[in-house]
Image 1: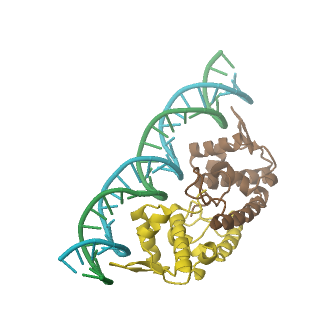
Image 2: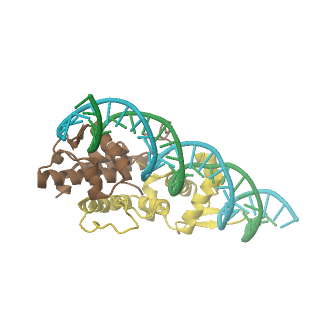
Image 3: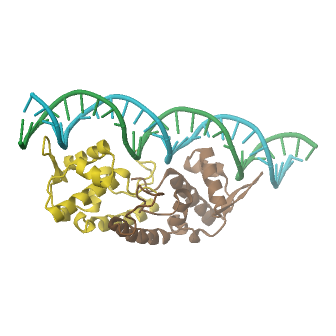
Length: 136
Length: 136
DNA sequence: CTAAATGATACTAAGATAGTATCAATTGAA
DNA sequence: TTCAATTGATACTATCTTAGTATCATTTAG
């Protein structure tokens, strides 16, 4: 079961690195090179991953020399759920194979109902964990 | 996010069909054709899916004329977690991309620890839901 | 014997994943 | 002004996974 995709995984590693850099060295702007040097992640791929975080408003980006990425919000406000959603869409364990078409069974499907309840709990749990504490 | 794969989905539909047939008509042995006729699932694919449930001991299979599949255990004893595990392996949200290799960070990784705790809750929830109640 | 059933295996088309390669645009500084 | 360092954007690609189909073998009730 792939719950955390590689995108999300790399993004988390990058964000944790940035949170530590911020806390320990008061380093606000970090480049892709900084992260690659420390975390050994694939350069261009990582760049695209960070770009996405910037588009989604989690990071701010700065072009040109002395450019890089910084947090657009404090790490404490960024939850694990937020990061997962950026790369994997809304957390929804209920997707059945008929998705798109209307399942004739959708409203009375008990499997769906049960999983929906579990899903709500999962979202709550993931929403309660933030980058600040993870980077500690 | 794909939590329930198509294998698992089809298997659940088949099992729910079988549980209803058992309860309503006391029909113990069901053929792939019976299920396909009602649930409109792809024949050969479904056969392989049921074969797997038989190998795993959830169903019993009978070859030859008048053959088919029956429950190898009462539907109440078959949990949602059991079915998921047959097709998707152990429920493990913690898989990081380094899986296989040893993550240098594995023991102290906080992301992992947090997700591991959530995973335990998820397994408990899924283990508490059975085919009998779902088919009701 | 034969039709009806599962068992097993090989094949395939489409999509997702995890990247690489390239060039464009921006910017700080020599 | 020029240049190097940085992100932005897009096109391409190799590999794996998914969701099947096709086919033949084996078993068994009647």
